[in-house]
Picture (cartoon, rainbow, N blue to C red):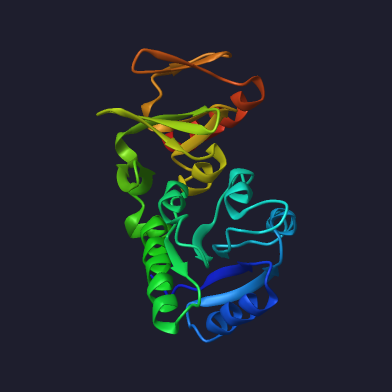
Length: 237
C-alpha cells in the first residue's frame, strides 16, 4: 500500500491552540491540513464540503461541545481529542477515539497519536488493493473484525446501525449503509433496497418484489430490478 496521507482538520475555539496543532500537522509527512474551525457549528457545515480523514478535536467549546458535534455527524472521520481536561478521557473512547491528548501538546505525544491514526487507516483500507479484496474490516465492540466477502450474505440498515448477516453468524455495528456501499466491490454486491445490500453470489431466486437468500426473502425495490438483472447477467458472462 502506498504511503498514507491523511486529510485533517483542527477544531478548537482557541486560535493559539489551533496554531500549535497546525504547525505540528504541517511538519508531519502523513498529514495534510484541509481546514481549521473555531466552533462545532462551523465544523459540521464544513465537513459537508471538505473530505476529511482525521479531526483534532477540542471538547469544551461554546454552543456545542466536541461530543455534541460528533453526535450530529452521520459519517465520522477518525478523531483525536486534544483538550486541557483529563476528566473526559473515559467518555472519549465511547466515541471510538483514536487517542486523547492533554494540552499542552508535545511533538512526541502528537506523533504517537498520529501513528495510531495512520495504522488504523491502513487497516481499514487494505481492501482498496485487488489482492486484499476478499475481506473488509468492520469495527464491532471496539475491535476491528475481519469479514470475508465470500461468507457475507447481506447487510441490513437498522436506524443508526447496520446488521451483518454472514454464513457463520450475525452482528450489529454502529455505522451507515453508505460507508459500506463504498467499501464493497460493486461487481459482487448490490444495494437492492434502501435497507439492504446483498451478495449477488448468494441470490437463489428473485421476482419483482423479493430476493431469496438461504430461504430468507428480502425486499427488492422496484427501481432496482433492472440493476439486479444487469448485475446477475454480468456475473454469468
